[in-house]
Image (cartoon, rainbow, N blue to C red):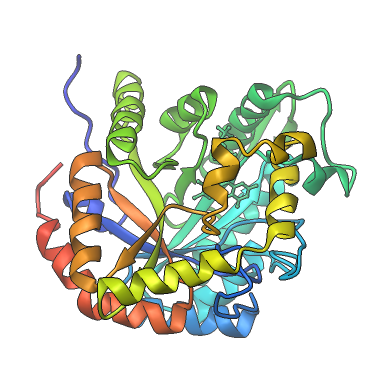
Length: 372
Ligand SMILES: Cc1cc2nc3c(=O)[nH]c(=O)nc-3n(C[C@H](O)[C@H](O)[C@H](O)COP(=O)(O)O)c2cc1C
């Protein structure tokens, strides 16, 4: 195989061998816990503004918003109210100075000509901190409700569409004009100015084979799913290998919900309290959105069982020392380049994590000048 490829520099710890630790912004009500017993997160801009300002003050590396158009209902009305990702991130770019601001856009919803300009604008507002999470859209109901679900474009074809989409955007960011006669997009001497001041950071969470290949080929980073370090290691090595074959470098990340307590017992009791309050109807709503039928949900397959924990992402619950140990092990074994963190209550959890966990993680995984 050819020489290892160095990462493009984005002023992130991972540029030089460190780990990027960011925040998944709670722009949807309820956060990532399907429970009646969780702290109330309203998903409002006011709350997100506080989270963003705090994220910067406390030294987190990035903040990212998802794009979501239909929630899961239930007693807690989980994710029934969600802010627009890009408008939110542009506003948050104005109230911050250093933290990276990454938005999310669905390739099936927005024309590349529109998105090239949106992100170039975010680049100006943020003074070069802009990033874009490219999502193809997976859940029909989110898009068919607005007549935007292409029935004749299946899962893998949606990545072919995304491939044309991102190539068009990259062209619009760098070329005087773009003409493209694609299967999905046609651009005719299409212009887009201003250009971004630097290359916006591109990330995708395509965990399927097709999604991984797309990411390895076109993205700067990928979110992998799973919480078993060995499984993450296999996925991370695989996508990095595919990228290397293409002469590219890709960062790998995962999400993690952190339940911090003063002691392990306290944190575990909190996690159990969330589990005890599982919002069954919201869980069913989420499963239906994922395409499970009611009959299958009743069968309690492994996926449903896992969701019954009430946590919508992998989680760790423990004292600060336990969390340091678990996350260090996760990062060491998996070889991931970073984590996107979720807190049950961000305003309470972020400072505690920054004070009692972050310095130890930074010390274990220093960002070394010159490291690949
Ligand atoms: C961290 C993370 C963030 C994601 N953000 C979004 C999002 O904002 N909107 C969305 O529709 N899908 C989102 N997804 C779903 C992915 O885009 C993707 O469709 C999913 O991981 C399945 O992979 P596949 O498309 O390769 O099958 C996200 C997934 C992860 C792991």
